[in-house]
Image 1 (cartoon, rainbow, N blue to C red):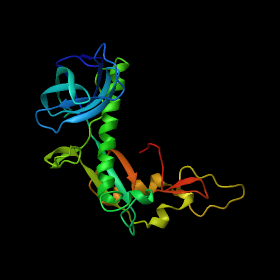
Image 2: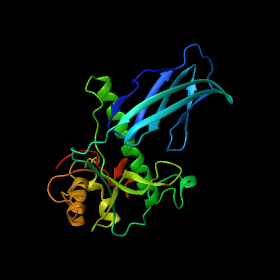
Image 3: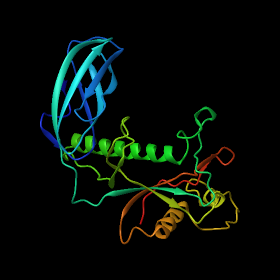
Length: 257
């Protein structure tokens, strides 16, 4: 078994790591690769013709990973890889926050068959946002490495709490997600004039010059926890696609201070 993007005993700085490789001479389009870690549940990924790509979970220190390539229920090849994980402690973290309207129902838009408690509620949004941030972290590290900049990536603010990234729900260090209760109603958040993508028609008289970005800054100031300069990724729970306006309301995809 060959690992194509990382060497044994290499050091990384993020909790989840992309590992891809191959088992030469293998043919099959319904194969699987299983990754085993001493402290986390096993993870299974599809494999095709001997090629595989996985996302492996790491803890601080040395991580002894075992890989099993399966065709059906038969293990046709095994491999081992040790990865050293040294989390950043001297870099300012990226803070995750979810903006919620003052009268929000605490749910986000979803198809009718994907609604309900734990599916499209605030708890689900926290879990999904946390997962998204760890994917960012892994993706940035991989592409920094490909371009010759080493395993550089972002640091996430983390705290010790029940972990939603693994199926065991054990308490461990995991990304913290702050909930920002806005002073603004859902209607105000979804006002088309505040949406980044909405373009007023000729002759339209605007009623406000506020932006979604400004509402997020306002909620962060009201939250009162962050003093001075911070790096924050803010997700709006009450964003909504308006088919008539063909615009995402309550949405902005930009950076600023």
